[in-house]
Length: 124
Image (cartoon, rainbow, N blue to C red; front, top):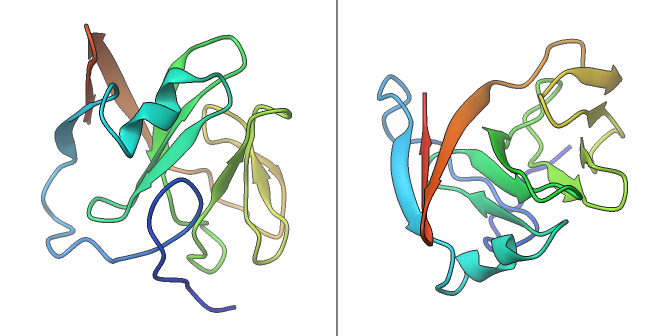
């Protein structure tokens, strides 16, 4: 397994420079590249915080750790299946971060989200 350094709506990892710092940041989903979150099934990987943000098929905005708990491969969101998918070894997680199938055995860390207009806050 290797990690990609791409950013945007698909993949990429960049370890948090301060992992002990709690996640708490705000994005404007009306601005690129975050505007993918206006569409059900859209997702964005925030490599600075190792968080994947997705809009479910029902329109809910959710956020979890973007790194698979198996071998830290960057996750993708499969909007048509409403799940997080690891392209490294095929682990799947539900929208709450719970493991659906392995090889990952540990759930993803889930974050709170709060939308005010077009500002989306992701926090612990």
